[in-house]
Image 1: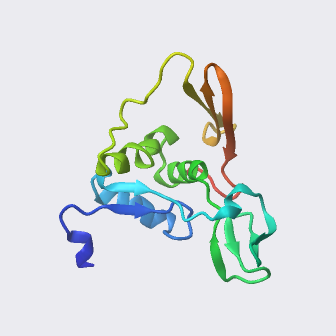
Image 2: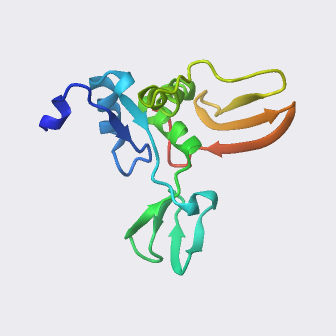
Length: 169
């Protein structure tokens, strides 16, 4: 426990609900300066896939609906398929905040530690990013759609949503 009382502590959390329970995830946010918390993922190559069985080299793995990668037919962890964008939505749900309040914990907070100033994004005419948030009938965020443009052309997009068993509460 003494490690939690160290000056200059930096806390890295994987917002998948498995590594850290939602209750502890919220408690850490309340107990520590937000500038010492960053979010990450331990995603492997299977993160680009949906649920199902896949091969990583000669190793067969199974990606579950919960984005946990296991050895097929077992509960044995083999990794994670949590993409950073999914992590932002899950962290927002656990912290009970809008996803834009989570964004700095993936970008500018760790960037400052590395000496990279990310507060002012590098944007110029024709190069930009758009983010849209989907809301359920209860008004809670249920998904996110992000598109990146270069020279006014969409070069990448990602649509993600919270798993059915996740909710803002």
